[in-house]
Every structure is written in C-alpha cells, then in structure tokens.
Length: 111
Image 1 (cartoon, rainbow, N blue to C red):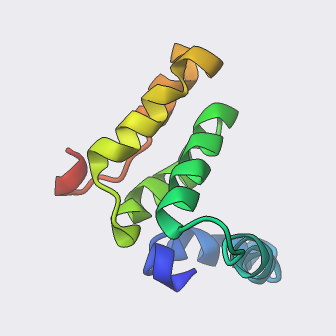
Image 2: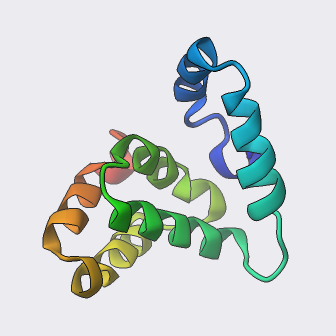
C-alpha cells in the first residue's frame, strides 16, 4: 500500500478509522495484501485498471482522486491516466468519464 500510495489517502483512512476502526486494516489486508500483490500484473497495470474500474462505477470520486494522485508513484504520467479514462467512453458513456476526469488531485502535475 505504501509503495503505491506513499501516504496519499491517509487522511481518508483516518476518518474511516474514527467511525469503523477495523475498516482501514481490512482494506489494506484484502485489497493490497491479497489482490494488489498477486503475480501477473505490474503496479502500473493494476493502477490503470483500478482507475478505470472506479471511473466506470461512478460515485467513487474520493477514491478515484487518491488513485489518480498515486499514479505517479508507480510511474504513470498524467497523460496515460487520462487516456485510460478516455478509453472507457465507448463502454460507459461520457457522463461517467467526465466525472472521473474532474476527480483528480490538485497538484501542479494535474492542473
């Protein structure tokens, strides 16, 4: 989790821990410990897939902001993330992709 996010999203996990103390640990153990650590895909591929999944689901903008913000930690350029989202348009439609594109971190790389 640290290798991908480098602390991005810690504030959100802290807020969750106040309401449901075990939830951040469960997220880390399952998503990172069992899913993201599997062989077969690299971190860049997993990050793009996660961004695409969150984009198509919709209503996941807070999580999407964390994953988009962490994309650089696995070597993805902003253009690659945008292209992954745009690739989803024919399958899920413009509204979901438009919402996903505005859910991005407010850093100089994404302005």
